[in-house]
Length: 270
Image 1 (cartoon, rainbow, N blue to C red):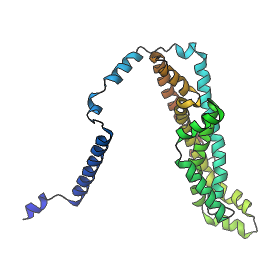
Image 2: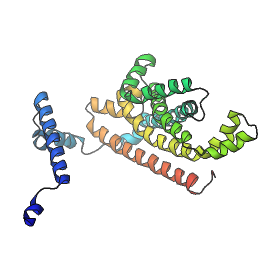
Image 3: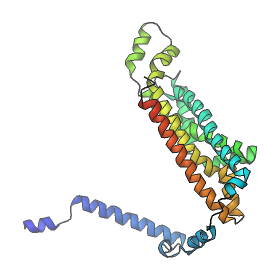
């Protein structure tokens, strides 16, 4: 009898089996509805192999013979930097209005938090298409899109950082007759400044990737050059651009990590 009990499946195993069964049913139902054969995931890769073959050998000379490539790289970096800087500054202002301990009124807090929630759920591709129609193709439309994305994402993070600050410093400053702005300046900002700096650098890391992707949809920069190379079937020119964007993203990521450790790790803000 004891041996039989050991052979019975545990509750944990039953939960995993139920989850796997439901997931399998959902995937199969979706494939049937879309008339898609999932076997193609494992058998139909010859198109990708053919495309890689057409990219070889890569034409690396385009990186130093085509001057517009470096101008596009500068556009991408500028889009990411300005989108992070302007969007981050707007996000900070809105965060103080959205945080419960710094907002002037509950009604204003509700309006700002609703605005941030709406901005956060709108896909970036929809935003860039709207700006492309409004201001035309180019880096300006991409920068505006990054500003909107940065405000929506980091406005919420900044407001949460403000709301989690210690109340004791604020109460001490209030007790000597300070105004709310003085409390924010001397009690709240010193506590949230390290978080703001870290999130700014993280936003730059994210936006450099986003700037490349937005360029494919008309946002300018190196992404637009890559899109045109693929569209014109210049695959040997496209591969160096792909490799260069990978190097660019890794470089910005390492620079962001270095600055974050340099500024925050050595306690310069304390």
